[in-house]
Image 1: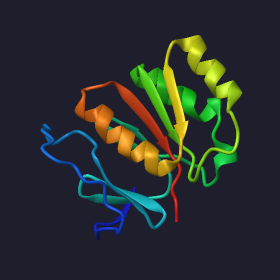
Image 2: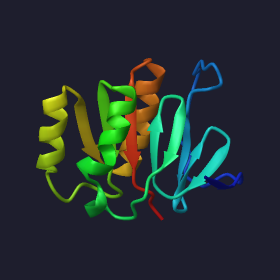
Image 3: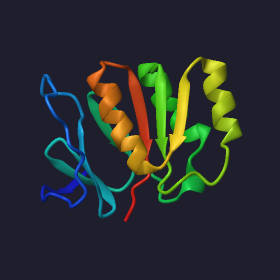
Image 4: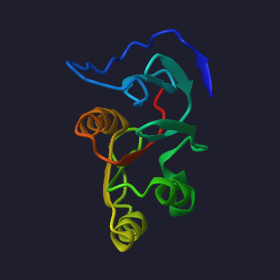
Length: 136
């Protein structure tokens, strides 16, 4: 999953964040991957509060209900964040309709915004899943 433990240049600042050491805090995003806690993970990822998974997508158009559904069923989140790289290019109506049907909030935004929002929701103790498209 991880390729190198070297830091990356875009850092998310966390101040006074209490953690049990198991929470998956996003510390940075760039260079085609994410700094999750002290590990750099190359490629797109799915984050749970205490787990991280590789996500087999490289572009926004590949995000689908079929790829997200197993993750939503695994932890039954109250919120799903989807970071699509740059600003979203479409409305994602099928994803929004699916989230509404299963009673999950969904927020589709740029990857950088999703990373910042992840840390805020995590600090609030929220049950959240994030699908994050890696940005170069």
